[in-house]
Length: 509
Image 1 (tube, rainbow, N blue to C red):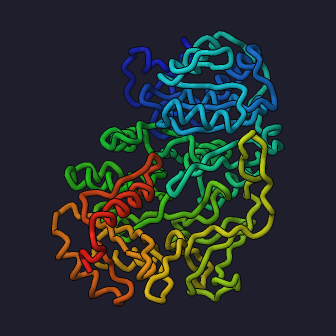
Image 2: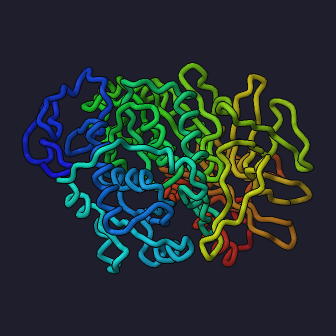
């Protein structure tokens, strides 16, 4: 059989069992040995490791060497994971980029990263043809007949200073290249697995792009926890539900936007809810969790979403668990969190301020234009996020700091958004500079039931103080999202600026 192909992928219909590459039958139910499960079938973790070693050997033959900086771009797939782990085994500096980027954006990041090689999936490799660009799906198929001794190891990659380069979401500006050491990444994955309590018989299903911090973290945590992994088409909710039911999924990780879509699907097909009862942990991250999504999810599934907090620059910072499901939970082992006021003074429990973090997962620094690293000062890292620690040490995150000065008051859009949630809606607040009043406040309100501006204006005004009230309320069926599933703050800012140009700024006041 070809490397990476299962019997199911070759046309053999398999029920409740899969055939590995040596023809041994393995029951799909009640089987605790780690597996990698895809829409085409399943392979053992041992076979995955052998595939990784074969591809690493093939890459070495064509000239990829330790220390090379290598870009990887493609959809979540078995082949993507094999290519990524092969590069880590070879001790390369891995540059992860979003698969939805245009070729021009990708080339810009390649230049900024000073990459030597590109490993691209379909159809990305067709855009570029040179001696240092490899179409990894086809390349992997050519490596299937190799016999490579040894075992997969992250030991050398863990000691690498520039082990991985990830990119911030760019939700508020141009993406920044974040350089992480292998030690920061691997050790953070170990601490995350310990905090969440993953077990060998768990089956993880990350509904996240593996090219970003959250998804990449789940991949590494899966490997160090030695449990099973489901690689699913995470944007197709119907297929996600089928995978959960048939593949014995026990842990799901997704963004709030994905859970919003899942709730909508289950409301239309309530008979499918019972099929999801095997999931013991529904984990959420990547963006602030609104109380509306949290409550809607509980009403439909009667389960609590387990929130967490992390940044590309820091890795995972805090996670909640079934044993402690309070907000984002306590900081991971070895991570310290404090909350400070505008002058940098520590605040007591339950006082809102800026979140600062001291973590061994801190980045080495940001990339500069020639691919070099601008070193990050070690110590406390100001996150520019608002939140607080409760008396039990659990972290509660409100959102981005981004102060707006208005009518003599300092306001935080994230704090206003949380207050508006109590009106029964999801909203984003954007401030636009105004010479007379300091700032105009635009409230973008999700209004799928089309209740209209007047309805929300009445509810919001009753909730907020006069100096907090919006100048403009704009309703829409759904807030725009960027590639990471986060609300597209740049797009909303553009909409607010465009609206301000053609209005007096008093609409909705």
